[in-house]
Image 1 (cartoon, rainbow, N blue to C red):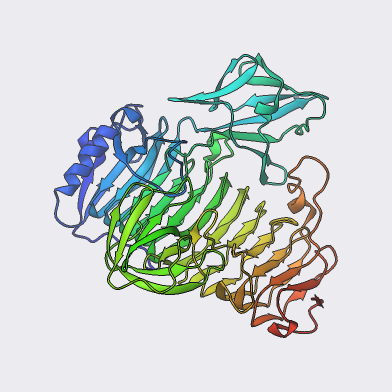
Image 2: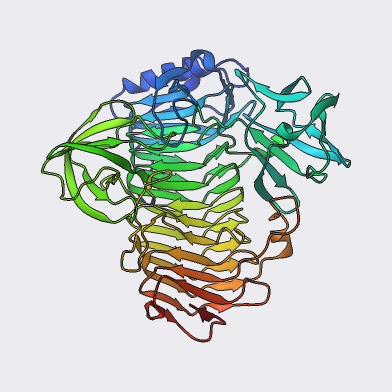
Length: 608
């Protein structure tokens, strides 16, 4: 998995243009793409679907429509119809390479750009994916007064005014309320704000693509040059969906906008993402790439590699890797358990397969107390499943506990990537297999650069970390007083140093530039090592975009490092410039000082 795939010499090449595609004409290329994919399926052995360089427009009229339950997207109330409108659908394909030759595939309407279902050995490379009219609207502040501001609307954002309010519109969609972000080009920072369009007393059109927003006194206004980004909150589609597939590689491509949750990988294995450019095409002048996450991994296994890529301009996390806890409802038989999807936006998909190993977990403490092997799993409803084990349930199974699928947990390597203009976190990782996060640059994450959770009472995202290395990264002005640069925060209510949730976490040889945020905040970890790191104040430019409220300056954190209920902790060999960083204090909570080895000569003092 460490070297990029090369197409065998014996591969059959077919041309998309031979099946009716007419690049550069604006005509719908989807029928041709479907015919070419069908032709490739009839060929035995490796096939290259070759797309001569050009612009291919893809419209929803003849797109595939398939029902898919996708994790972390929308509840039954938010989006009752789970049908996805899919531009490029590969179903049960194998040994197929989609060669873009630098082509642009331009999506019209709200669609899932790409879906792989039940595929094996697929490579997608050298293409650019974008939307003609992105579902995130953008406008730039051009003037402001005491109770109003003017905004220049981006030409790719369409709107209409009704009863003094602005509605953003596109192909088959229209919204007024929804999340908003501010982007400061001077500091290259993005953060979430209240929707100023909703707050405005009224909106007037001064000229085409120029709006004036009027406010009641006291509403915080935005400075000239700031870009406002606004979207609907419903994740009815995703950017791409990789489902029950294996050996998938997405290489040397540009993904310039994604509607919905980004690239979602669900119950897939052995995935490689390399040399990808997640950023707006420069010629568009847009600032948003991702409606929500960039790459979201749920219930995957095998090796997942994310390398040498740029993640710029997102409305949610860049990388999120986790499993899903289902809550125990009852045990109707000695070897059966009825389970329920609990979070409103995650339900309906198969989470267990015959032969899978599962762990039984106390929701309050996140401690596993038994395992089992799945013999069968049957859907009672999209929310509830009946799982039958090969043997009897472990003793002590209680309604309200959780079950995790241990088999579908990936090894994760995130290397040499650049993350910027992201309003939340850089990398979230909750998997028990090996995690390596190295040689990346996290440039001004509004929240934490790296976040490790595990919880069975909120998003129900599993599971425990057992072997994690965070090394040789640069964290540039990430986080604030409420969001440490590296944040290990399992949501266990029963907290004790003798009951660790996570184990084996090393944070080594990183450069952390911080003025506002703690370098490390860790809870319930056995064997945490923070060593060889360099911690210096963030530059004024780096902090310039950290004022997320629009009112005043955020306060700095009181401690540089905080450990809660940790054991076998080591802090050694760090180089700390105390001037301008959070105070050089290591604070301990719910743990004896003897569980920490704090070496001298680091400019740190212990506060238990």
